[in-house]
Image 1 (cartoon, rainbow, N blue to C red):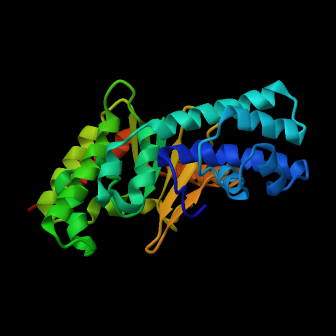
Image 2 (image 1 turned 135 degrees about the horizontal axis):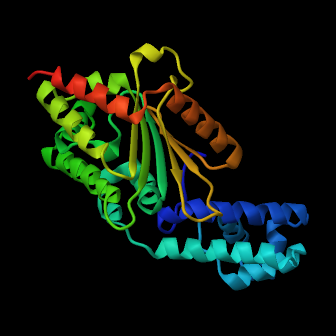
Image 3 (image 1 turned 180 degrees about the vertical axis):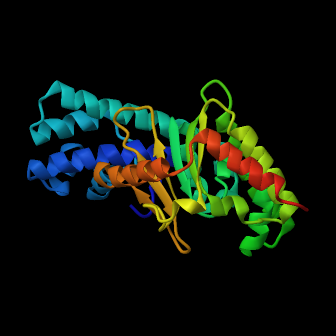
Amino acid sequence: MNGSAQQGNRASTVLGRRLGRELLRLRETADKTQQQVARVISATNSKIAKMERGWVPMRDPDIRAMCEFYGVHDPKVLGRLLELARLDRERRKAKGWWQHSPQAGALAEYIAMEDVARRLRTWQLSLIPGLFQTSEYARSLAVSDGVWEDPDDIERIVEVRMKRQARLVGGNPLEVYAVVWEAALRQQVGGPRVMRNQLEHLLEVAQLPNVRLQVMPFQAGGHPCVVGSFNIVSFAETEAVDVVHTDTIVSTVWVENDEEGAVYSSFFDRTARLSLAPKDSVTLIDSICKGMYP
């Protein structure tokens, strides 16, 4: 799915869009129009459209009235929808630090999801995963990007990346399963000194109990994920589907349905199986690091 919700905390869009799709399916099954539903809950057609797209929080009385109108009387179905709505409302109330950082830009929705996620699986072709980057590495990327010229803006970009890494520690750390192509370890972003420090940091991160790091070596040859990098974000709530995030040069792509998400998960698993085991991956990273001279 391209684009995102335009209202509320964007961390809520995962559950909000799921709830909206459920209500849309029930309405279409009942053969009702948005105009008819709008009259039932004393709302406008526009509000019904926003509800079905997950753009606005939903009140329990509205959900109950809509289900009654759709002929849905199963208490389990109603209870599931009400629980989705409750979780979505709680997410919208949360205020994240990224909302006050314009430099987060298009990454803001992804950061919001990452902030409340339980698990992240990431496949990277040419870059060290953002959660594992040093400030020097992140700064070198921002400079080479060419979009930001003001040194203060560049420093704020680096600050955004460093703040994200707080999710790796604490009482409820994010579980991260990262598979990185060997090219990302050898590409000298910022020069040999910066890259050596980055690889040393990567070795430290790999020791965290909530991090699993594997390297896809050059010698593995072709592999399922050769076409591009992506992230799979998973949440604790059973009703929240995995969200796949991937960037192209001109846009951000979101995948938020079980079928397509399962394809990405399958490709990730197949690529991981072709990669070095964590212990062997650390050995390779250490070898590359020692061979990188300033």
